[in-house]
Amino acid sequence: QKEVEQDPGPLSVPEGAIVSLNCTYSNSAFQYFMWYRQYSRKGPELLMYTYSSGNKEDGRFTAQVDKSSKYISLFIRDSQPSDSATYLCAMNAPNSGGSNYKLTFGKGTLLTVNP
Amino acid sequence: DVKVTQSSRYLVKRTGEKVFLECVQDMDHENMFWYRQDPGLGLRLIYFSYDVKMKEKGDIPEGYSVSREKKERFSLILESASTNQTSMYLCASSLERGWKGTDTQYFGPGTRLTVL
Image (cartoon, rainbow over all chains, first blue to last red; front, side, top):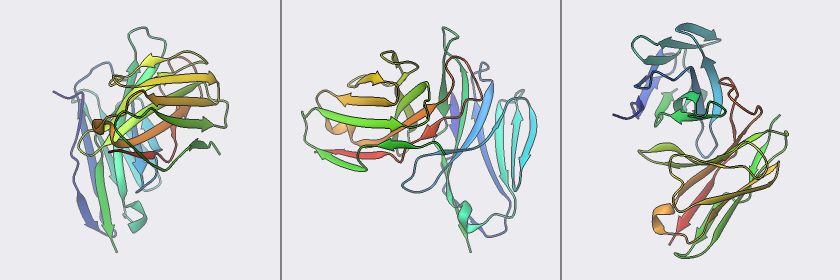
């Protein structure tokens, strides 16, 4: 079983739709959960991060974490064509020495919002 | 704004060549990372460095080496390029040394390497 599973899509929605993107994970040591957005031919950029279970809202974006189910989600309200990108979930935990960390990424979901 | 730059956007090399990919960050970040990104496999960590001259292996270090002689610069080296190293290579940096779960990684634009 992969540490982080993410449906690669592609996902195509009309402008204004509510989008739900999801990841599951198997490693209970993950403590922080992030969503990165990657536009075509660009590097990923951090969209949101959360630490605890529950919801975190930032404008049209809501990140949700359910640690008991090992499941995280990103919701996009009133989606816009400018939201068209690949969305990657990422998680981290200390390495074996506890001194540094690495991010484990999902494979990314390609989202297209059609005008 | 943090800026992470990579030496080339596109690179074509032949099998067996030695390849250098350069990454520079301008924000005095402690940590630097090299990833490769492949369709269906996502982002995979090759190496990272948390200090000058320090490095740690990531998930897929085989066939690669790295060098960090100055804080702002992190090089990825393919000693003898092979066709299975054709990929998008992404460099990233982050500010804080040590375990900081909220430390944001800032990515460069990537280098698309093709090995023929």
